Structure formats: structure tokens, C-alpha cells
Image (cartoon, rainbow, N blue to C red; front, side):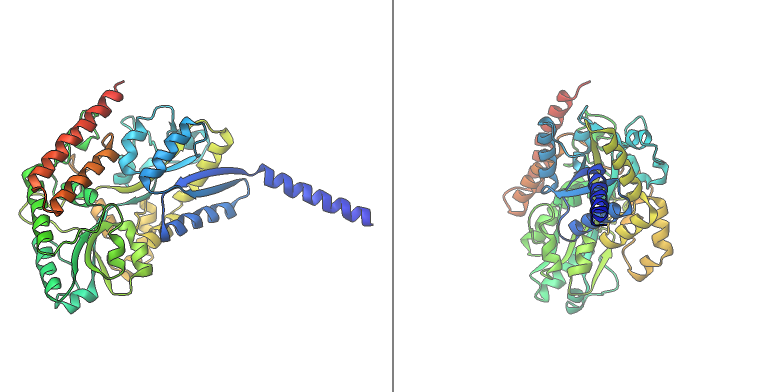
Length: 436
């Protein structure tokens, strides 16, 4: 009997060992932090528990720029991840990385997974689709820029709390009242290049760059020194001089100043919502971006932000099958809707948007539909998005030049002219390097 029991235990152990060995691990490099990092880990856990064949292993690899650089180095060394999260700024670079990636449309088709690009929100799917109609990467944490305001600070300043400032003159007036009431940081902005140049351009239906902002060719050139761009940056510079706009740093760094209550108004990603919902100790609101009411065609629509998931080449068929199943899982309306409610990122499918709407979430949490409604307005050639080569370097140039304006060392015109000059050099370099 004892030997029979031992044999059964051995057989069970062998079965468990075989099952563990048979499970295919899929490495996923990402750049999500704080509450969004928790979300990514939960998605992987949920998928892993839903089946036994594949195991998604999410790994934080630093900010978007850092993870992309690390992945390129890993690819050259032959040990790239299976899935890489890349922010929208890196899309043109990834598209030009011939041999490094496999189009998501091909991955899904080869794995026999149902995949219909028409089911995805057009503004999202269109951005990640090649001219031949094939979807290149999987939309994941798609976002857009929105406006957040501290209702408690507004109340203390004698400002209405039921409606955010809808125009730039109203933002300036509100900031002045906030300052007069003792608020040290009336307004700030995160991702200043995305919010104050890219989204600003689309929202006012003016060109950011030629060739439909780069979507129609590698020979695009910047147009951010137009009279309207100059006017806007000058206005922000004047606000900075008066202590109405406080510059808090690059990328997402300024966001902490809003959740802490230090800054009363901020323009940043809709994907910031999860952080605000969890950490803000005050009443807050979400609203559309402000605009200049005398500009014809404004407001238009905002552009896509966030990131998508790229499938790296050189992997086994089994890994690609697992990746396809994971993307199918992520596309489920229930999964998408839950993610949208939790993070503020856009629901990437129309089915997920409808499910969220039918659940009553938008009525229960006013303002959470702002990102979606801003993105589904009628899109023009000037507002489809920005897809430029070497754009990571161009954004650094934009940060450097705008900081000179906020510090009072350059005029808006000088800085914007320099952004165009230095940025176009980067575009020319990318064009030459990627001539077919």
C-alpha cells in the first residue's frame, strides 16, 4: 500500500512538473507606474488564471523612452521581450523598424484568433494602422488630454464649482482669483509638448506639421511657429510671469502637484484619472480642454496619446499563439470597460464604450466620458494625430525651448522658431535614414 501511495504521489508530481514545464511564458515590458502598474499586474494575473497554457510576465522597464531604448538594445542582443509597450511618440520609429516587429494583424490571423479592426474606436485604430490597412500594434492604454480642476479650491476662491473654465480667457480669470485667494499654484500642465502643442493644434484645427502631421509621409516638417501657436505660448508666458501658471517639470512629473492639492488646475492625460480617484483628498472635476473662442473651427477633437503593444519578431509560434490569446482577452468588452472605469484610459472598442455607458458609469462619475467624446468628434487632416520620425528627440527639443520661455530667457517666437529649426533637422535625418 505504501509503495502504491508513493507511486501515486510520484505520478502526480510528474504531472504537475510537466504542466509547469509546458506553460509558455510571455515577457511583457511596460512603463506603467503607481496605480496603473497595479492595473497591468492585475490584467496579467486575470489572464493567467483564465487558462493554463500561457503565463504573461509583466516587467516595468522605466519610463516610455527608457523601455523603448532598452528593448532596441535587447533586440540587437537577441533577447528582446515578446511584447513591448511603446508610447504613441515612438510609433513612426517602430513602423520603420523593419524586421524587428510583427504586425498585430498578422499575429492574430496566424493564430486563428478573431480580430476585426472595425470594432475598435476609429480614432484609436486608425493611428496604429499602416497605409495598406493592416493594424501594426495593439491599442492598449490609449488616452487623450483633458482638464482637471480642484472644486474645493474653486469654492474657496469664490469660483463656480459646477463648471470648469471652457476658454483660455476663463482659465486666466480663474487663475487670477485663485491666486488672490492665496493659492500658490493656480494652473500647471503635464506633458507640456503633448498638451500645449500637439493637442492644442488639433483642438484648434491647425497644423502641427505638414503632410497631415506626418501621417502622409516622412517628408513632413513642423508648423508650430504659426501666429496662433505664438499667441498661446505668449499667453502662458505672461501667466508664468504673474504667478498664475507654475511650471512643475516635464512629462508626468507635474501630476503629483494636483493630487496633493498644491495646484488647482492641470491639463494632462485622461489616464491620470485612476491616480486622482484614488489619491485626491478633495472634490475634483474632469472637463474638456479650454480653447480660444475666436479661432474658427475650435474646438475640434483631441489627438491620441498613451501607448500600444508591439509584438517583437524572432519568437516561437507557441509564443505568438499565446500573445494572440492575450490580445483577444484584452479586447473583451467586459475587460475593456473595467479598465476604462479604473484608469481613465479610453475603451478601445465601441462595444466596451457602449457597455460602460449602459452601466450608468458616466452618470455616476460625471466627466469620465470627456476623453471619449473629445476623441469621437469629426476628425480632419489636421487633427488625426501626430506621427513623426525621431519624435522622442523632437519632444526633448520642445521641452528645452519651452522651459526657456517659462524662465523668461526667450520669447515665444524665438523658442517656437528654434523648435521648428531643430525639429526639422531631426525629421530630415529620419527621412534620409528610412528611404526605401
